[in-house]
Length: 126
Image 1 (cartoon, rainbow, N blue to C red):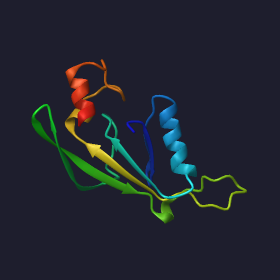
Image 2 (image 1 turned 120 degrees about the horizontal axis):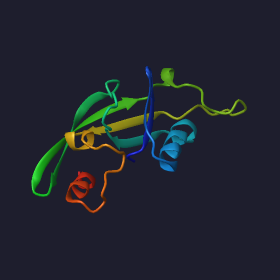
Image 3 (image 1 turned 30 degrees about the vertical axis):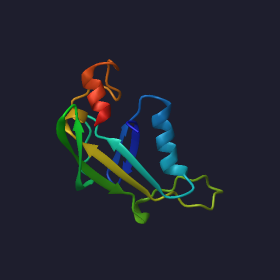
Image 4 (image 1 turned 90 degrees about the vertical axis):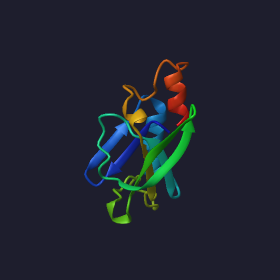
């Protein structure tokens, strides 16, 4: 999802436009099992808490592009209790994969507009 909430050892990075971002945050707190979340970097956000683990290559409009792949895993010792006081379950282990590319960092909003522009279609293709 483009909308995300990543709680990390130094704070939180979030990109929320509405209900989907709130759902993403709730899933990271209350999901009954381990969770893998994939998102794209937002401009003005600091993802230095994540580690570069590789890259993904794609061809968009005939041009080969590479996205850096960053990973941040919420370790058991870093998990903050988020369950209701009467719940016996621990919060899920969450692995966040964040894709970084200048195209993702160049947008001004979570969802690029207009939706029919070539630039926007290339963004979603990447």
